[in-house]
Image (tube, rainbow, N blue to C red):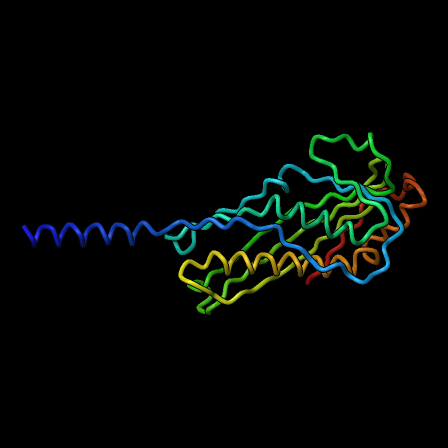
Length: 215
């Protein structure tokens, strides 16, 4: 009887190990200190797409552990704060809002083109790492595309605790802050968004420029 009980326990433990585990990382609302910069003299509207607001990344690592990372609402709040620091006037549009109901010089629409992460078991280090690739699309006041900018960001955090969820969350926050620093330093130069304060683009100027920047 005891032998059978031990055998059943061993089988149960083996099945549990093979099944792996599932971890869910829900982002807090990260913030950035207000940068000491001169605001860009442009009134902007920031349109948050549904895909951006509800972004969730789920991935199975090494065929056993499943990680689910919720970025959406924290990303939306983070970009709203960031652009509030950068521009003279900012209005945040929900996915269902019609831009024609608002007055602005330029419309900015962020999106996530790519999200990757690594855990210590993959990298053979004691760190979690996160890579995020954002797309910053800029339009003039009547909807003509003005520029399209790819921003790649990276964050890394040492493993703390048994589960690692806090460490992965920290790496994601650092990647977001990395993107914010790049956007603060280069957005005006790369996208030339300030010219939209003078009015909509001419028709022949509406082809978007493909721009990229690596953090």
